[in-house]
Image (cartoon, rainbow, N blue to C red; front, side, top):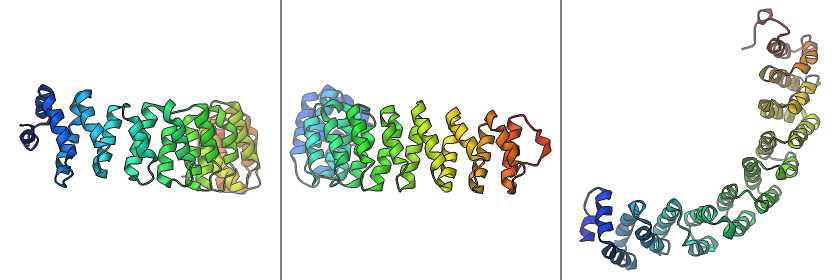
Length: 319
């Protein structure tokens, strides 16, 4: 009876209603379906997985436990996706074996990572950290592990991600800096400060964002100190990234850069003072009113207007 219902084009809820009323028939049917290794059985297995989310836990687990052990990769992936959505953790030992199997499909290992990280991070956190650090593991899988670790913000996770900032692969370093930025722990300040010297711009950007978004004076002071001593092009980039913080520490550092010898830095710093007004910068902005660069002069005027030192009608703002 059940095979006829499954092959009919009817609403999934009608199927679920019948299954719920005939649980033994469904279990036997599921067992037979997943025992069949013929190619045509794939359609039936996939059909069972299509409505597994509507079943009660007991019946859903009957499908999922068989799906994640199926010899066909697409069925294993679908089974793992179902296990992730339902937050089933009773299959975790089997899921861990899938993750540890280097010959397993990437999609299967990816979903295994997310299942273990979301259902039992205490038990499997070490495995996830090992995956993230292992340079022999494929890049995309390492990045998935790093993403999952951001949801496990403990000391071990932060320490493991900090080590990734020294990885030879720039994408891993970028992922590591992003992860620390997302976690936002003051324990990562020293790691992120070191990443400000990374050769890759994207890594530095995430390190800047991570430090900027922490409510920690040490992080902001570290940013300010770095901004003062780095090269002009980097100073311009840093000003754009940190000005929105509107921190006294950051704005004071930008105000000092108003007197830079580099015209690009002066432009950026003067623009920033218009975005985030900083009263102590008024003196330096007034000096820039006589600067030889027109944009610098205009941005300085805009900053002074924001501070109420001059009237908007005294100049035409730059477009």
